Every structure is written in C-alpha cells, then in structure tokens.
Amino acid sequence: MPSPAEALALPEVVVLLATYNGKRWLPEQLASILDQEGVRVRVVALDDESTDGTRDWLVEQATADSRVTVLPSMGSSGGSAPNFYRLATLVTPPAEGYLAFSDQDDLWLPGKLARHVRLLREGGHDGISGNITAFSPTGSRTLIRKNFPQRRFDYLTESPGPGSTFVLTPRLAALVAAQLTDDASPARTADFHDSLIYALARGAGLSWHIDGQSTLDYRQHDDNVMGSNTGIGSALERFRLIRTRWHRNQAIIHARAALRVAPPEHREGLEGMLALLEGRGIRARWALARRSGQMRRRVRDQRIIGLLIAIGVW
Image (cartoon, rainbow, N blue to C red; front, top):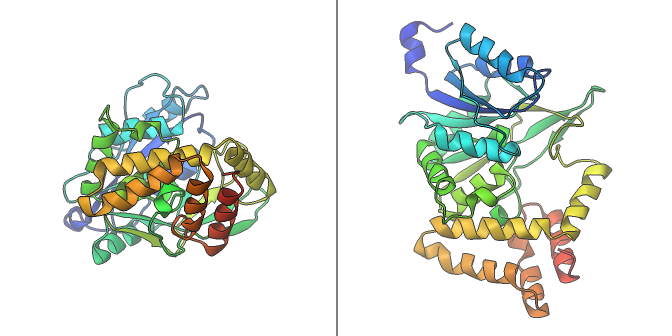
C-alpha cells in the first residue's frame, strides 16, 4: 500500500458508473475499479431507476467508502447512453486528472487505469480505448480486437472499443460535455456514448490511441445492449440494423456532431462525407462505396461495408 504522501502523488481518475438493475454483477465490477493499482480512483454512480435494489446497494457502498459517490435520482433516462450523457455533463475530472467510463457488469484488471493514463501521457493523446476479453457463463474466453489501424473517417461508422475501456483527458471531457449541453448540437441523439465520444474527439482533430492489450474482461449475458459483436446472433442483429439504415443514420449524426467541433482544415473532407451519407442517388452511393477504405479499420469490414453500400443495402 502506498503511503498517504505517495497516494496523493498518483494520477486521479474519476470513473463514471451508469447502472440499471445490475445489483447481481456490481459487487465484482465495483471491487475491480476500487482495487485499481497506481492511480487514485473516485467512482461517481448514477442509477437509472433500478427496480432490483441497485441504488440502495450503491448508497451502502458510498457510506462505507468515501471514494464512491451516488448522485440523486433524476428519473428514468430511457437508456444506457442517455444515462452516461447525464453523468458526462454533471461530473468534471480534476484539472490534472482523467475521466473514465464503466459498465456495471465487467471486470477490470488491476493495472487497467494506470496503463491507460501512462499511454495517454507518453503519446500526448486525449482519449484511449482498447481490446477486451469477452467471457461467458460457460467459461469461454475470446479476445476482441479493436486496435486495427485508424482510418480517416472510421469514427463515423464504428467505436474504437467499448465505452468501458475509455479514459479521457480534461480537455476532451470538457469538449464532450459542451456538445451534450448545446441544444444546437445533435450529440444527444447518438444512440451510443462511446461512438459519439470517439466521433467528437477525432472530428476535433484530437489524438486517440487504441491499446492492443486487453485490460478488461467483458461479461456476455442476455442483458447486454450490444454484446461483443461476435457470433451468428450478433451478426444477424447487425444486418437487421443495416437494413433499417440505423448504421447509416448514426453515421450521419456522428458526422454532424463532428462538424460542430471540426477545425477549418478538417471541415471540407467531413462535409463531403456528410453529403455522400445523406445522398440517395446512385452516383452518391458509388462515390461513398469507393471511400469504404476510409470508413472502417479492418480490411474485411471495409470490403463488407463497401459491398453493402454499392448494392444499396447500407
């Protein structure tokens, strides 16, 4: 254990914990956050009107440990992303600290935050995410790789990893909060907070790093919103969303949100992508398909999205 003086010298990370009916998993999740090594951790939780006693359990933990704060009830937000949006606008990281995000059902490895803070500092990055290891009740474990090379416009169509791997600098946290509180910004209409944050960071020209090391065990269960995007069931769900143009509509939201923060040198290319995303003619479709290599990080995914755009499905 570090001495009090040594503890004060450690970087501080504020972890935003959004919960809803997660009491069965939270003891392990919260313990893995509070047991982080090499950093000072504070947890700020906001419960979304749980009916399983989650909020009462969190209040008990806050009473027993001063590092845990539970915000007052705010009524139902309607989903995980809106709950995180509330947290991101209500909580400010310390000037020399960092902001992280946590789901309610994962397990963090002890050095997760310290490693990511170090990588942020060494690389001069404003945001970081990383690979994860999905695990199931049957005991299977699968590495989910997210650290394929970033492309010019990958932030319009995919997240750089689950939000539970995200750590942000105060500069990026302030930019996100400003957009979420700006009525003229489409930021709050994005369906996933991780994709939105990545789009804002990259759109603003800030540096983002995707860590190739897995520092988080990602629990797979029926209540996951999207899961780890593996398996036939996940593929079928993704295709259903593609057919409804959900992915394309989210890409449009990300492009519009990114334009709100884009520097002049980034605007022309981003405006061109937005025009193609909003276009419905065959010329726009083929022009967008030719840019598929800029829209996804993995080569396989570039080919798939290019084909789906070309045939008019995406």
